[in-house]
Image (cartoon, rainbow, N blue to C red; front, top):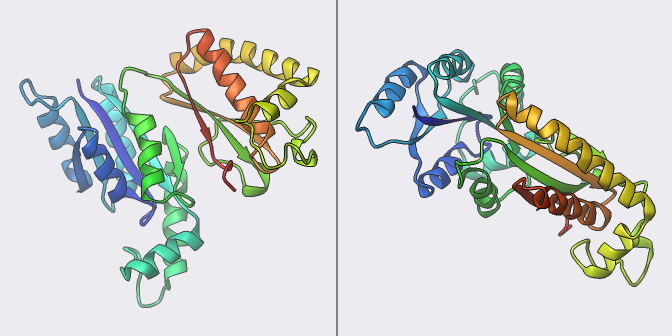
Length: 280
């Protein structure tokens, strides 16, 4: 049976860039695939002697017809993950204006913004059924590549866990499954000796984790995760993103996210760590 990755999402959100990265990771990529050919491609890829172990299908315009195909592939025993690429309307407008391409839904009556919002509304229901949502609004090509490398360079992990720090003032991560708020802890920003540092630096880490409330928070959370992570895996979930936020995403959330990841690793659970807003 094949390991199949389906890439879908908004036009202009990075499907072609994602396809290029997956090719570098030795996935067999079929880009801009008509939905009518999905069954044929999967049958050929899973045939004995095909040599294709990892198949990436990058959706064309017929996104809404994908999910019944996905259900059928899973029923046949294939491991199938669906990734949805999203981005803000403002960013998509900038990308289309820079590339001078037309949006696939654009008409003489509808402008670019209207076309983007129309596609967003059409795909909203399907988006909720996808395994992973990646917001590419703030990601350049290299940052997108780094994120994808972390997610898809190791097929042995059937539940990939990411602990990500972020700043609430920059918005919630779209791909977060569990959101935690560390703003109840004292803020190192108000200490002039710590303000220019980040949660990766020892003085800030010691300040944050030295709070009694931080120890209680992390300990109880790791205990809870030890209970629910196997349940997520048993349900067949492929990705679990635990997002830890503070005001700016530079001090408290970074230190807490690293500590959570370290304790989960100590218990034998592979975990990836990301710090979305540490450089802001």
